[in-house]
Every structure is written in C-alpha cells, then in structure tokens.
Image (cartoon, rainbow, N blue to C red; front, side, top):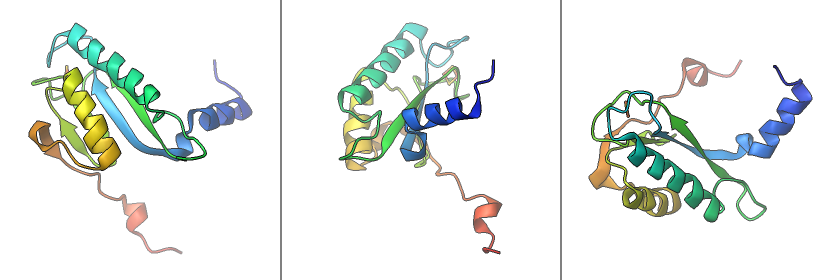
Length: 137
Ligand code: FES
C-alpha cells in the first residue's frame, strides 16, 4: 500500500532524511552468508544500531542538526573478509567488521573523521553526477 504524500513527507522529516550526513551500509543477515557467518553479521548490525542510538547519532537534534543513517544490506557483493561495511559519502569500504572494529569506525571515522586505515579494503567516494558538473542554466 502506498502512503499518501503528506504521510510520506512526515516520514521523511521524522527520519531526518534531509539531515543525513553519512549513510552506512553493513552486509548482515544475508540470504547467502558468504563473507562471514550470518550470526556474526547480525551481532555487528545490532551493535551498530544500538551504538548509534546510544550516542544520539541516529537522529538530528538542536545541538547537532545532522544524523547518520544505517542500512542492513543483504550483500555488498564483496563476499569475502566480512562483515563488509561501507560509509558514504566518503566511499570507505571496511572489511572484517567485528563489534570492536565497528566501535573504532564509529569513534574514529564517524566522530573524529579519521579513517580506520588498517581495515579499509577500498576507498572510492562517488564522483559528482553529470548534472552536478553542468553549469547552472
Ligand atoms: S555476503 Fe557479505 S558481501 Fe556478499
């Protein structure tokens, strides 16, 4: 069932979508758990959600008008050395994301803007789209 636009707008506002500063994707609860055992990925996912909430990073506040979104991905297609986690817009892909590594990513990358280099498998910020490159009319 499709929600009416005003309801969708309410959802957008309540989720803080216009204030997202970073979006994290974690491979977890996979249909075919290839990069790590499913239970390990679910443990990290639950920890990531709880920790972002605990730190108040998951919703915008008056003091900090931005928020961090997190999404559980069924598979990020790397399918090795998981759990795999990617942080956008930075485009930093992490491997072997245990609960301890997840905490370091939150503390060092998300809060201090210091990439946790030893767990990076690739860095590729998304390039601007053609539309963004075009001169204003
Ligand atoms: S199963 Fe985790 S990246 Fe594919």
